[in-house]
Image 1 (tube, one colour):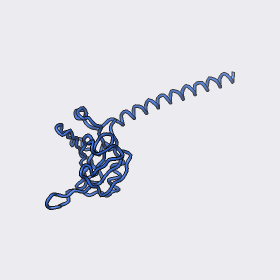
Image 2: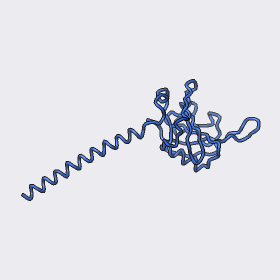
Image 3: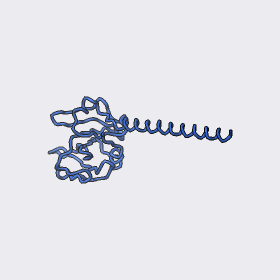
Image 4: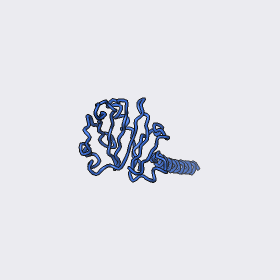
Length: 174
């Protein structure tokens, strides 16, 4: 009798364990599906021929700032980062830039003053000045990843560490 009771308990524990594992796996799949969904409005996302790059904390994005210029095939939106607004502009990466991980920014006329690596690829930092007066007009961080070319522009100067933190937090749509 004792042996039968022990086998029944063992069977119940095994069934419960398998059921819990199935529920956990299903939950993980749902989370991955939800997590990889781009925050770009569907009406805009349908028009894009490239993947979107965005902060993992989608709450940093101003939802009213999404703008798609169909004639130029560019997507832009604003991100709040380190007490400043950063304008993201994305388009399909130009062929002249090279491949992921080997982007050659001087091919586009960009001469970065710094570069760093992120999980999405190398990021180049460049400063810009107004033509004629040489008045500073901000700095930008440039990334080419997954066929997408991203320029993030901040009028307020960010430290290299702040840029790196922002770009380390980015995700690319599936």
